[in-house]
Amino acid sequence: MGSNLCRGKTYGDSRVTLCATIMRTTVVHLHLFKNAGTTVERGLQSYFGKHWVSFDKSTSAARISQAELEEFLHSNPSVKAVSSHHLRPPLDDGSTMKWLPILFLRHPIDRIRSAYEFERGQGSVTPSSKAAASMSLVEWVQFHRDRPRSTQCRNFQTFGLTSIRQETGRPVFRRPVKRHFHSARAFVKELPAFGVVESFDESWNWISDWIDDYYPNFSPDMGRANATTDEGDVLEERLERMRADMGDPAFEQLLVDNEADLALYLWASRRARAKWA
Image (cartoon, rainbow, N blue to C red; front, top):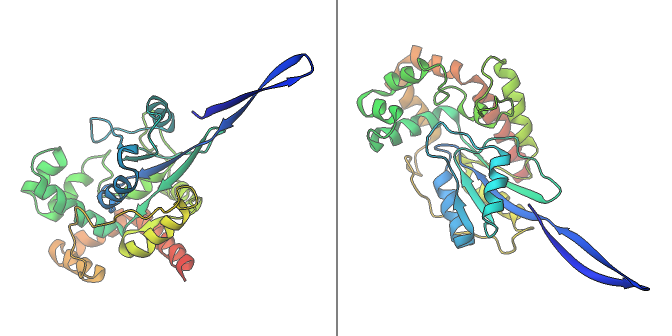
């Protein structure tokens, strides 16, 4: 994946070719659905221009492995930044490739609300958006609960970041969810910086300071895009409206269904704020 810089040098009557491997450093944005990903994409595009690309497969449930990403980059040597809905961990540095992962986490219950509102306005593009267009929030959540392979309303971020996967890229659901939580947390813990949607500006400053070490003057235009929440709206108020709309039993069940995501979000939020303090 890296390139070789070679030069010749003469020793007596012999000429020796010396080669040094050049490390390729690529920004990799793991675009988790409804986690401020469109805003991040626009910022990366504003900085990298034609050297930024979006790389996804044709179906919404598809997954992209590190090997597939490396093959894609090998075929596109000018790319310096990639955004992908389908890329999943593990993502390990090699002898010729250095990854700079960008990741944002979000309060999981508020993310579900945002996903529902987005898909409700999207129209009949996928089975999920078709359901959202004709169902209430509580019905849409139940629609996903009845689909055994759907993680849209069940620990979406934990299952999105776990490294415990089948060859197809899907999480191994028969493994205890705590194992997936620990795997996802380990991935986030290794990141030099990451984002929390509810503290976007502080997060982006942290991420930018880190990436600036590799791409000088990294200060993209971060105008907000594709938002389903007013900036002045308060998270706690949104959650209370959700509870009122869904009813206490359904809302409490949603909390139970997302215990791992809630734990991951709270842990990540505390870790990020400790860095900003």
